[in-house]
Picture 1 (cartoon, rainbow, N blue to C red):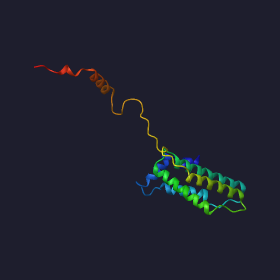
Picture 2 (picture 1 turned 180 degrees about the vertical axis):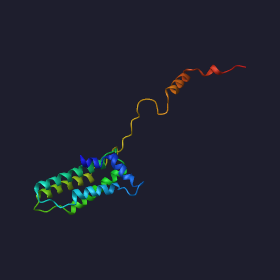
Picture 3 (picture 1 turned 135 degrees about the horizontal axis):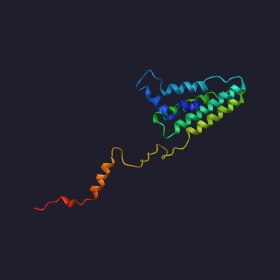
Picture 4 (picture 1 turned 180 degrees about the horizontal axis):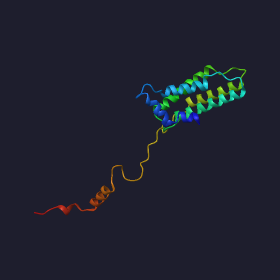
Length: 166
């Protein structure tokens, strides 16, 4: 829940674009890097319980990044940055499969690497993109009821009423 709040699509878009207006603010790349390095950059704890908690946080972070990068409602810049971070983590996992004596970590990293390999190799679906918004019912913005009534009245009035004969 905490991780999904950090990269909620609208919040992530604001973070991605805020540095364009204020260079002192962190950009999305920095936020993704801090969270990723916290989840993946630390050594595996010796305590089995703590190690399992670390693996859970890592899995949730990967799931959140995949959801962010594949959501059609997410800004393209955000999707691109999330995808880039997933590719970086995938590369790190190729280089760091875990120590053989820690089978749970090796299994976890192998599972996540397989997940990311499938994510990268997924089929492209041309229809998969931002959905066209549905036009809401009612009059268009800026059209008042009086204008609609006038237009309806004029549509029923014969055009020859104002013709004069000389």
